[in-house]
Length: 221
Image 1 (cartoon, rainbow, N blue to C red):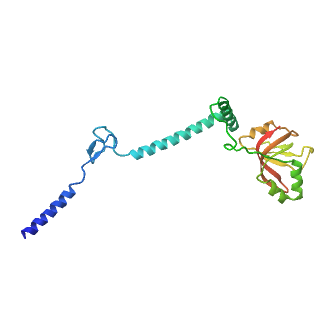
Image 2 (image 1 turned 180 degrees about the horizontal axis):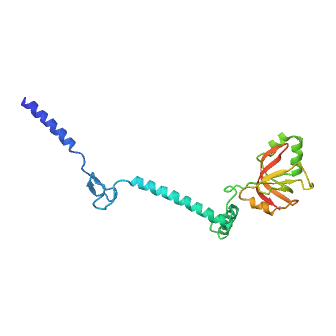
Image 3 (image 1 turned 180 degrees about the vertical axis):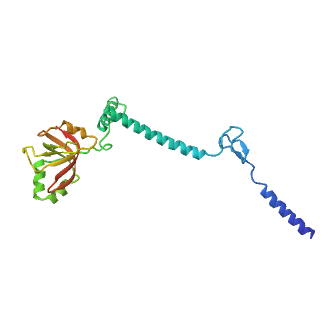
């Protein structure tokens, strides 16, 4: 009986010592000093032990918000100054060219920057093909990036579009209706009826009644 009692006491002592063997200290996340397990502030460096991840997340969110505010302010300033995206692109191109001429950077090769070349077409041929078979004309020209010359026929008072017709006609039901983008909308103010111009852009739709519709990229006068 005495032996069994002693065995039981030893087992209880082992369990008790196991429970009391849990670590009572931990290392500070900042200075690696041994501190009490329950400590929320390091006695040595006085820095908090919790909230590290939350602090990082808050910093990232703050940076994102600050960046968006910066972009908003810059956009507003550029709009007030009348600076367009085309102006910025030209300025960047001028800087690139200056750096190339000074030997600071290597010139951009055609493999690095693809140059999109338009397909040159004749406006009279476009209308003839539309009259002959609108379906074939749609298959041929829709979504094509083209360059075509014609006479300015109408200019929308709201600046939403203008149209061109064959140069040798004063009035025509056949026309290419051209919509400018926000970046090149100001180009419409330079146009006058009967001006002969060359437009570069993408044909967006083709119809036997509506004719051709284009999104403008450039105007050459």
